[in-house]
Image (cartoon, rainbow, N blue to C red; front, side, top):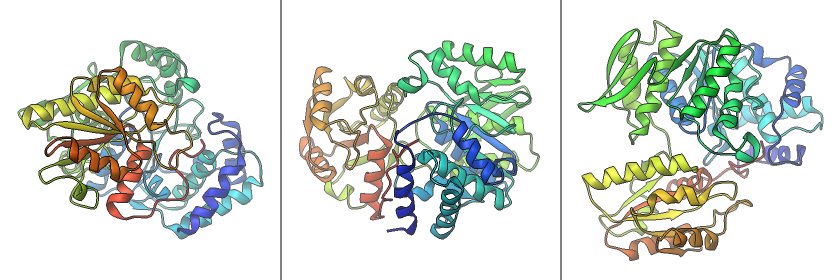
Length: 442
């Protein structure tokens, strides 16, 4: 067990709620720490419902291909907490993480503080003390009251596609959710806006107009699309002809567009078209339509099977994923079997709906070690209500064995939750998981 696990577990007790969106506690702690958030390299701040992580990793990979040192803060983690904090290109070491967490804990002095807030403060300390060219900050939840939203003036703000998620905290309409996401917009800071539903885009434009924010809006100020097996990006500065991103799925073209539009706004001459091409080819991001290579889990399936993993967990993610697997089936037909687990805070039924005429069978799992996991029996009932054949399994390994028996050489997709994806990757690689779940308090 990593030394940091004991501290991370202890920090969970600083606040009674799982989620408590506010900036006051964060501002108080950062003041005690000497305001590290004011000493960061230029910040790219990324909010949105879907595509945040892919956009962030494409930005990082392109910048690193250009020789830049980049700090990155993302959440949640899949297997180890250290995945959240990348310092000048390297995942934070356990020794460094322990020192930073202990420093933040001493400064906080037992005051109420969510887990996400205090670990975000630790990331800011790490970034302020190590030179880099840029910081990329991914919003944890929402935007306006997210712990990352203490940066007074980022270099660029980015809002990826917005959809229904976390309605209990962000609002029940797309306009309300978009208003929370648009809370990261700052006067005098340009912003890149990804592909949006009309209602969400209108809200973002209203907020931007009040603040005098210059927007670069997808399908209006810039376009990204596939043509002849290439990625074409076009804006007022001209056209880029680039390789398709290594991340699978048509939706990754939109995410690549977000990254490229952000780089155009930054206008850093060090980040060349050659670096963009190299970055798109080199980009990797686990549990995003990832086909798992040979390992302990794939060995549980019959010869000729495929094993895929995706952590998408809201209705739009379900639609995107179903479309991607329908297209994959058109190219190379195989019976699709889902292994499915979700948290009880998610819209499970509408996530699954797009698979109604696509999946041969759904094998339902209760996500291990997650207090808020939906029970497998409840998931199976939701699947049957949608006309899908559904079973339950007591473990991931059992689910894979059931999938292998259900049809010859299936294409198996494990989906519905990043927290389930973490367990899958740990089982496949043999890596020990952090004691603190990726779903820890925010």
